[in-house]
Length: 347
Image 1: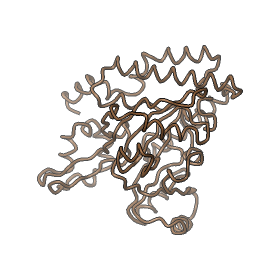
Image 2: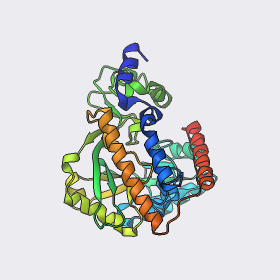
Image 3: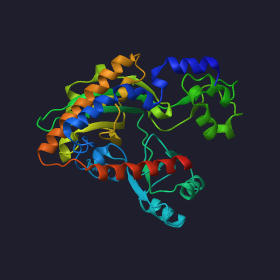
């Protein structure tokens, strides 16, 4: 990393590590734990998801609680299955290449891959150390995130954040190599170690003019996706769609939906969209990124969400939903983080 790149990274808070960003406001989180007399005060927020969806929850438990017509076709694969059994499951469920694979319990786009052929699938299956999912590739052109919360004592919730995502990508010019395009990219240049790990074998390839090359298929900030704030698009029509989802099982009160759709207009009409993920209590209000927001403004938004999370969790607890005990939560979190470290080794 050049000196110029290093200092521009220091100057831009969005490029700081998660721990550095959140350290100054962590006493507020601790205060909510003290007020609740529960270290894991957030666990009743989404009562039917392990740990409230803070970390370590599986995608299956989330998909099973949403309407079937808004979930991409998905099957679950044991990593110790013979590869022939994997092919049988894929064939029996009508999957065609390309499709998506990712760990059932995952985060930050770790081991998220698009599989183009049987050879790639076999390599992935032989490598991945945990259960994973095979999911149809959703070709809707628009990817968005919607942050939604609803106080359990109210019928209507709040859409607090709405962003459009653009996957990390470069466009060829017929002259420069992939390496040169990455080094010149405003976000990818900060991720050279990751880019080398993933794409070194293609570095000398010259992309044709206008050719798009996706550096990552994971649409999250951690993987370099570009976010565009759609705050002005939030209205009652959009809220109605997510109120309906929240009331579907009366248990999703706080979190972020990651969605693909044909258009924002169709999403507002409640049609032509599929939910890729629902992230619960641990969801970051990612509309703080890529919108020229100061760190102070970002902190204000984060703290507003933490307050909502505390109020939802406290109310649900008063209705009889217990907080997780300290030992139970610590054991769950320890196991989840061990799981994620294992995934990172194989990513």
